[in-house]
Amino acid sequence: MPELPEVETIARHLREGHDGVPSLQGKRIETVTIRWPRHIARPSAGSFRRHIRHQTIRDVGRRGKYLVFGLDQGSMLVHLKMSGDLYLTRAHEPRQRFDRTVFHLGDGWDLRFSDARKFGRVYWVEDPASVLEPLGPEPLSVEFTAVELTNRLRARRRALKPLLLDQTFLAGLGNIYADEALHRAGLHPLRRSDSLTAVEIGRLWAGIHAALAEGLHHNGASIDWVYRGGGFQNHFRVYQRTGEPCPVCGTAIQRRVIGQRSSHFCPKCQPARRR
Image (cartoon, rainbow, N blue to C red; front, top):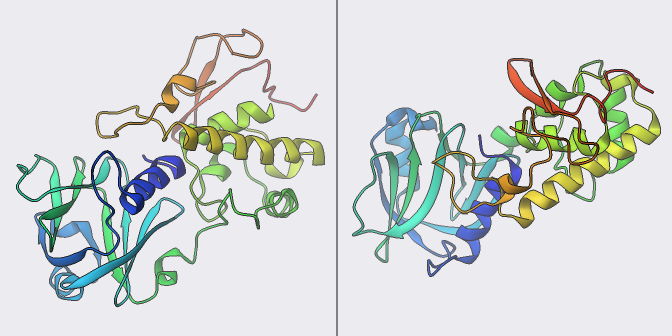
């Protein structure tokens, strides 16, 4: 699933233009083709089509793993889920197999939502908070301090890895960046959130920042055929490196299923109990 760096990279490319493709901002949606009605989470597909027609895209942003498009009236939100991709292309280009929802723009361009597994969702809402309010803080925002992380960790009694994946705890982290952040912090994925010392919390805060910053620097990770252009997969410390040497100590990376998700860690750098 695309995480914060991957979604932010897509938002940046759509907002600023990329590789000869212009910015999406200022383009007008003439109509929309919906080939998979369940893509539309809110309102109904027919009502969505009526609300979205003839609206101009005023800005492109991100909140957590959601792409957020400010319109003349209301906002459009897109969640890519497991296999989604959103890209701008010339309208005359042949439709790709998994282009489920296509926004036809007024100047010969299409905004296409490709989604092989059909889990992605699109919303039109008057107020984005109606969907986004439950999300936790943005991990790279100035408001997300080590003190804020301390308060949030100590208010819960959960294993670190599942907690970091909880979008109501912290918005935007997923499997890749949680594993990478925990390795940087030297913390086992099963350590209890309320057992961390102040020093360990400081390391975790720094590890989250560093992992996300490096992911953004490399335009995210391309680890599946649906993702484009990222290079962070060439710099993983532990994620999907089972049996390979830890870049810090050389110990073989281990994999363990935690909360039905694969977790990768170094048993020496990330001991199960506090030293």
